[in-house]
Amino acid sequence: MNSRRNFLQKMAGSALALPVLSSITTKAHAAKPQPPYQGPVLRVAILGLGSYGERVAEAMKDCQRAKLVGLVSGTPAKLKTWQAKYGIAEKNCYNYETLDQIKNNPDIDAVYVITPNGLHKDFSVRVAKAGKHVICEKPMANDAKEAQQMVDACKAAKVKLLIGYRMHFEPITLDIVHKRKAGDFGKVLFFQGLSGFIIGDPTQWRLNKKLAGGGAMMDIGIYSINGSRYMIGEDPIWVTAQEVKTNPEKFKEGVDETITFQLGFPGGAVASCLSTYSLNNLDRFFLDGDKGYAEMGPSTGYGPIKGRTNKGEVTYPHVTHQTVQMDEMSDIILKGKQPEIPVDGEEGLKDMKIVDAIFQAVKTGGKVAIKY
Ligand code: NAD
Image (cartoon, rainbow, N blue to C red; front, top):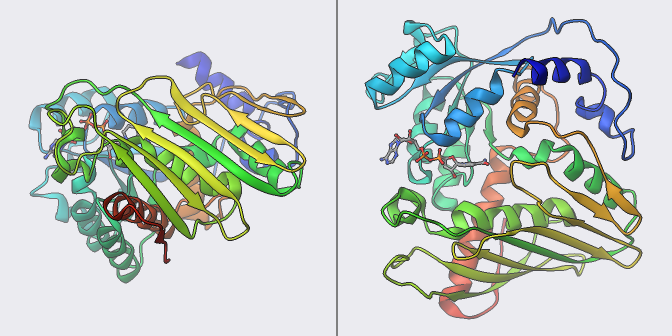
């Protein structure tokens, strides 16, 4: 961990500092020693101490501009273990009953909601009402209606709402987006997104409609949806979709196993995507224009991400996505920084509207218009 921290500190201001990324091409700049960061630090509490919460907590050890200072959990034993592991003060620990009292705690700026999807809305609304900024994991909610309620609650409470879209800060992704914006691929007309893995334990919350909001689409298909938008640079206006279920025992009513879907974009581009819980090695993006192409595989995993274009490989040193994400989110919340690819509630809401339209298209078998 220390060597990673040293590496990150050395790289700060060069390859890891995202504003600089816009001005460099495919190679990292030589590392220059940087003075220690002296600016404001986002003080974060994690709500939901599960496996992804732990990944975020570990990654935050290397953050410069964000710090894990609080915990919220329904399991007292977990609070104790995490408190010791991450050095969290007792006064910054809450359970689901005491959560609302966080409003009286001046030492916490934001709460990162990392529970099963079906709980995101209620917890995010409670956090907003307590006057704290909300960072919420993807998918933002179980559907667009809930997502809208989250956006409204945060607006009313005058707090920021950000969605845990870590790829929006990933260097290879950003470089390819810059190339597309610069016209390197010409007029983009096609995107392919493949997202899937074989899911295990049939009793887990990811296969429970109430807690997951659906199946593979909510968990992994959302990467292809979101990816199609940042890779093409537009929001889709129609969708068609087809569902295949080979194991109705494991994938019950309302829990999708495999869905193929097609998205139409205002500029004439189309996307063809696959979301599944029944195939491994599906983590690929392909973007094609009349002058060139980009492909990524892996495209959205924890990395290293691999990217290439018709001109060759796109390489950057691997960074821990969640470390960069939390440092950047600190700047968004505390300094009003505008990220290159938005990560706010409205962005998450758009994805939820597309998910709703996909489920509707599966049901009707027709083409469904997407309204924002
Ligand atoms: P997990 O099952 O490992 O953890 C979920 C946590 O929520 C656990 O601590 C659990 O105790 C708690 N919880 C509270 N109420 C619960 C309830 N009623 N049922 C079940 N658990 C309950 O799940 P995870 O993999 O950490 O996923 C959590 C969230 O993070 C999900 O929204 C998921 O989509 C998201 N996630 C995002 C990424 C990413 O790369 N951005 C990766 C993995 C997970």
